[in-house]
Image (cartoon, rainbow, N blue to C red; front, side, top):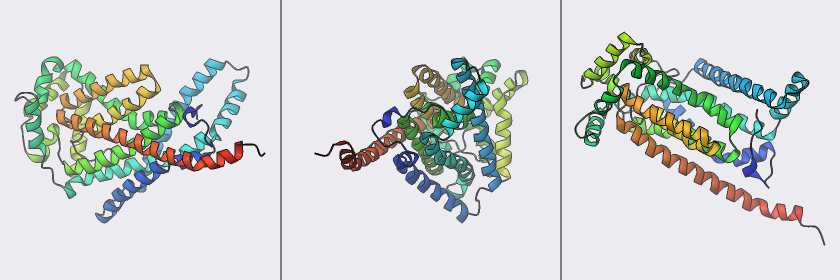
Amino acid sequence: MSDVDNSDMAGRPSGAWHQIARDIPIYIISLGLLAVVWTLQVVYGQPPNIETVARNFRLYFAAILVLGFVHLLVLLIANRPDSPISFVRERYSALATSPAFLARLPLFAMLVVMMPLFSAMKSMIPLFNPYSWDATFIAWDQAIFFGHDAWQVLQPALGFPVVTATLAFLYHTWILLPYVGTIYILFFAAGARVMRQYMLAFFMTWSLIGGLLATFLSSVGPVFLQPLLGNDHFAAQMAYLHAANEQVPIMTLRVQELLVEWHNAKENGLGAGITAMPSMHVAMAFLFWLAMRRISRLLGAFFLGFFVITWISSVHLAYHYAVDGLVAIVAVSAIWWSAGAVLKWWDARLDLRAQPTLRTNTVPAE
């Protein structure tokens, strides 16, 4: 719904079907991964319900409305048309029927379905692999921080209720990345190359990191260690968070309580499920930075800072071990590179196949 930049597709057929053909690796890889997740959920009797998918659609549609409104204001301010209504009608009619926009609608449909599948899969992790890695990750953190837990190292700088409350608020804003942020890249900001690499990496990140790796490295994280596993190793950290909450509301504490309630009730809706390693908050923040730095230097710098804050906050707020973020960064880096390599290889194949046709159409007959 914006003037999508397809400059990196110059010299190539630009119809919607041709652009969808460029995205075939995204569909093959992502739908294959989603099919595996869906099959496992059906086999284990926990498929996501249609209401969860509908709720996810409403969230993404709300993101489109918000970004669309902002985009509309920018257009009106920049162009100052004599007839705003006619200007908007003509501009958006053209954009909504453009090949670039139409080619991205199937990717939007996949977004709507993917998040409910992931949430249901996340809730099923203990069925495949009981939580057993926390002691290992505690030891890894202590090896990195010379015998201390990561939160203890951060506490002298961050252990103030106002600071903790601020970090908790910022940590909650992360939810904008998979919704508003992804819609921004899909429809409003990115050129075709960045958008395609981001979307493939997005689906792979949720499936491979949030699904496969999270299942293999099944763990609950500091905040859930006591209520789920009966281990009070982080009792002092939780005591600080609750004490801080008495002075300034710490938003994450209520969410953590809800996650325990949903876990005990075996809920598998949006946002349900408990898993620590790897950190999906850190993974998504890092992935978003990788994409945004290709779109805007200023936005890249901003989201680099957001990524660092997210990683630090995940430890300070007791959601994650420090190594949860470290593993997420390594995994996302590999996925981002792989997604780019796959798409580059596919584009080269399509370009090679198109060359005889292009020569036939452009070389004049003798």
